[in-house]
Amino acid sequence: MKRTDFRVICCGIEALIREEKLDPDKVVIWMDWFSIDQVDSAKKSQGIESMLHYTTQCDYMLIPLATDGPADENGEYVYYPEAW
Image 1: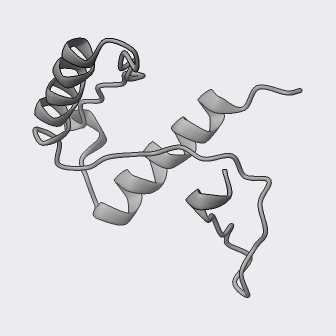
Image 2: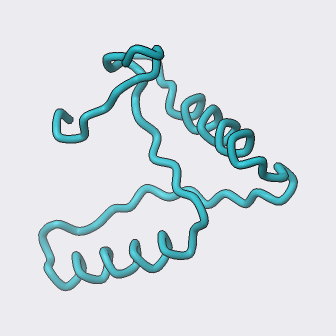
């Protein structure tokens, strides 16, 4: 399987800069994969609280998705999260 995660993220950032007319020299990117403990309820609560704190500080959020799904009439990929 070919790994395209980095390419998808870069394309998303470039599209955001272009569509929102952002100055690329002033764009700051913070990336993280949230690992929230699903067993320990106290740690799970702390993880969710931490995630909410960080994400509410963002002006934009990029959620990369695979590009192998069905396309709409414009050729844009259509995603249904409940199908994952």
